[in-house]
Amino acid sequence: MHSAPESSDVSVRDRVYGEATRSYEGRRSFVVVLLTICVFVFIISLSCRQATAPGPARNVLESGIVTLTDLDQFLADDGPALRESAAQSEVEQFVIPDYPLDIVLTRTEVVDSTDVELRQLILERSSGLLYARGIEAFDRTGDQNLRRFSIQGVLELGVSQVSETTHNRASIFAGVSLLGCALCGAIVVATGTGWGRMRSLGMAAAAGAIPVVIMFFLLRLIVGAIGNGDPFVSGYRDITKAALGVPLQNALIIVVMGAAIVAASVVLSRLERIVSRSAPLVAEDDY
Image 1 (tube, rainbow, N blue to C red):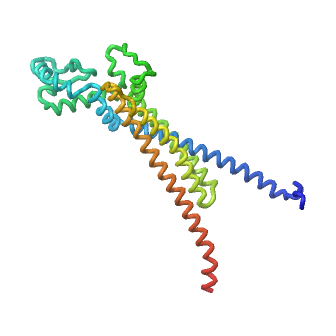
Image 2: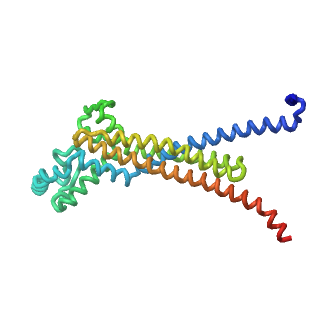
Image 3: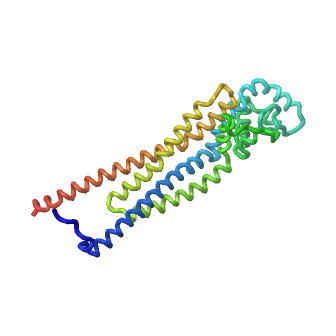
């Protein structure tokens, strides 16, 4: 049995560099954690920005407006009367009567358009109004008050986020988080060694995306289970599900990419070791 070496037996160089190495690895791990958080924030903010961009957002809103307003039935029931009223009216612009939103049409648009063209006009202006004002556009009196913890209130809260205001805020968060990803990623690469740098980046990306996948997958399941035959609730549900699908898809892409980067780093590292071991043998045979 040999006694453990005393601290005096350890050289000053080993003590100094050993402490420095432990501290260095701790700081590097902290940066990797920050990179993971930045990836998480970036995926959500970028997805929010994509889902609330004018084109996609209005497409999503239009699909829900058809259900929310029962537009097809409205045109079937009130379309002929609307055309007759517009033809006899001397007013150039008017608000569609008995329609849930304050949509303004011109007399020419109503009289000269086909049913399909009139439907598209109403959808485009309805989605534009909702995108600019949010779900409050349905509240003409200002007295509408939905309970936030009711099914309809929760869905309304989700739909109200598909707006220009949310798009602008998401753009800011996406820019800041992307800058954080770039800065932390650069530090991880600069302080790493070999293929471990590539592996760290892939693991951080996957670790930041996996919680997004789980969170939004569960949210889509919950929202999809909501509905009691009420067309108003169904319209809210369809819009919310479409919006929740964007971060889920983006996060899945990041998870796959991160896993591929980790796998590639492992394979390349092993190939490098195999090549380095066989290199002396090749040189000796040549000699």
